[in-house]
Image 1 (cartoon, rainbow, N blue to C red):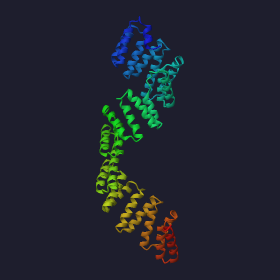
Image 2: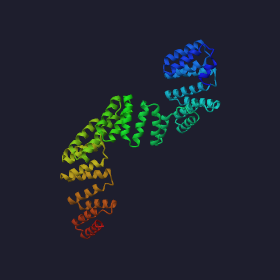
Image 3: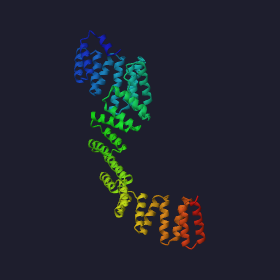
Image 4: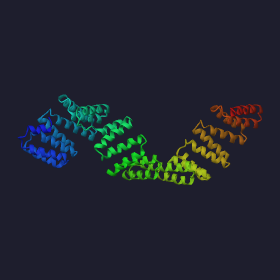
Length: 436
């Protein structure tokens, strides 16, 4: 028996006209007015269950869940087995559970739905509300099963396509999720959350251009949707539309000034722009400008400092490059790449002693760095320290026995040391490996 059945059963009650008027106000979402109307009906007949349920719905619409619960309890005092009152109480308990982060209220909602379904096994609203409560408890599979059951029983059932989309998204079934969101958007085309979810799902299948359009629609409706600005920026970034990406991130940063993550996103875009200029376009000076912008956003951005050092190195500005690499190892003493870059600069400028020190730091950071071992061996050999040079070439050969270059270098060191027979064996091995 639903609310209209209650009303029909109490046509003689002076509260009935107020109940009917209140229902009309509920449809128009005039919740405050509906509360007043149902209250007038209750003043005339406190045993009118329809007015209690109606007033509960009005309070529900106003977000006053405790008051709504009180009303549904009063309705159930009058008719303990009425399915609509039971289901509405389950609904409000679920909302209270969400509001107060109290899963016990959700479990109570499930029990109420079970009671309702025991009396009315095919009551669609109870199937739906039990599904919603289970969804809230994280029992997604069980919830979806109940939604499907309600859909089969009732042709007019408002299937929660938005939850189906989210369910499929969480299972990484992105194409199916998109289909579900399409169904949901047919019914609620201006729902910003649905537009956002659709855009997010499209990103997962590489549909960045389409995703951008959904994020734009979302933001037109809700300009303060920070997450949409963020994903809009991410989509633009993937498409190399860097200026648009930065604009989107800046919008997000304005909306959430207390967060530092947007500065990181902006910094990363400048970093990508710098790398494009440095490695793809061959414009190290332009790259440095982008790396400086990255560093202005995040002062200790290790990758930006390292990349800036590489750019200066390409320009031949070795002093500036070394300063950048020193900054990197100051922030990250285990950064072997920075030590290696410094070692190369020092070697190129004739500072072999310091170059060896930096190559050794490289090996300390990365014991498998055979290039650094080979460089140390060569520099030691140039300095006349043949014994230690041979030791480093042997370290290379321990890791790469097929290195013809290391065998040849070891042969040179042995030759200079006066061990010609051993040197010849190394040269022969190097020759065989090189001509394979």
